[in-house]
Image 1 (tube, rainbow, N blue to C red):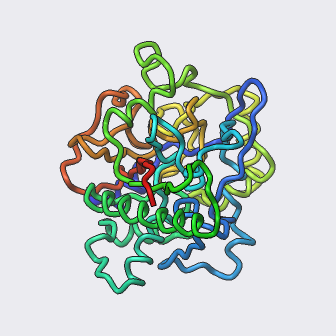
Image 2: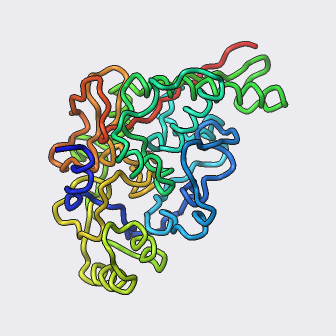
Length: 352
């Protein structure tokens, strides 16, 4: 079956992100999203530009933000966090950090923009997807902060290398301007970004739990639903069929009353109500992060690692029994609309 047909005709098996009702207090974090990407890139810290996406003048006023519908987890960095966390990474091992989320459509387009601005040939770096899928998803403004797909391993490695250099430029600039965070006299901090090693990926995905007891890195797999007023308009804009706002509101309130539970991550789930299904990956800050603060290491898109032929973690199209922390999917060297990636970051200190 043609890829776009699979995208659209199999929508009944896809899970759309939802608001999750959890016990206890949650601290909601301010994350970038399509309606408010922020002035600075969350990946390089620089003023960013996202080329190749046509934004209508009314887009940010009329398009409901994914922040309305999607649950945002309670993880929050402590004050005094390592300065490299300014660039979207969280601590994993001594001197090793990992992206909190998958690299987004906007983040990868930022990369292509800078390559093209330097008059370099970027044709080999463009994600390999049919034009229909590109227009539906990767060139569609509402999906700016959803994971980039159609990127092969070599392209993912090129992005990581470019982003590491971009961060180093900013670090050198800060030091020149007098910032000495985490530096001893005469030192400078330097980073290298790369694809995570399989063992690093598995460590992050375990979420600090015993993977023998908790094979998905979560101690709770299902959670109840909770909706707010803005969620109804959001779904009406994103819904693939014509639905009135009143009918959407009535259906969602019925779900709350019936105490429906859905997975805390974005995988194929046979009991997901049709209105919450969408044939594309989810907003990168959707659903619940694991206890280490990482989003979507299970589900959403499979992820490249640097030292294995396998992709890891499963996708929004994979059923939960097909996914394991230690297992993976043989992608070969080709791109797929089920595969994305995130970067690992190594930090070292060198003399000036």
